[in-house]
Length: 187
Image 1 (tube, rainbow, N blue to C red):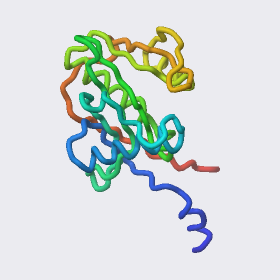
Image 2: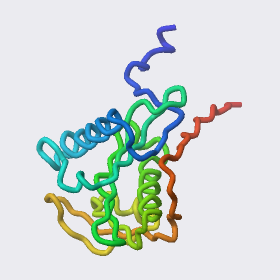
Image 3: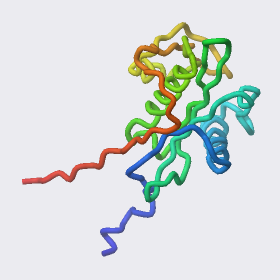
Image 4: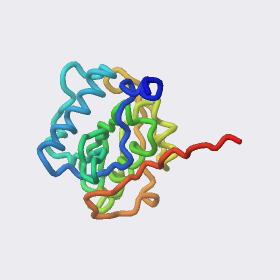
């Protein structure tokens, strides 16, 4: 029995279901800011103590939360959107918890929700300043680079989403079900 449970304590809990939604409750907002702090301050050390800025006062925060018994339980992804000027929206502070980065499409679904939400609110352009290591990921999601830049001492690209690939919607949440691993049968 011990051999079966060996290493179980070291693995993170992996839910089978996630929800991507606009932040609605105080615990979601607290989790949203905590995750951003963990990723941008502790892990990447882009900011010293906190990554909040003036944009947070006008931004629409969006989270990905893992679910327990069908209910959102813990924030594992975050992004924010805001209208920078009439018709021009920006996304920023995209973050996914380290334990959930390679579990499907959490980052992509956060981007889809962000762009489609802004498109539904009247965006005619959607832009983001993307860290260089994530440019290829964004290109696969139908974004184009408008040029390289340095931001917070790190290489970034100013990028634009192809809005034709992100239908406008007014949904406040979407479900993202993580595919279950198949058991391989060995002959």
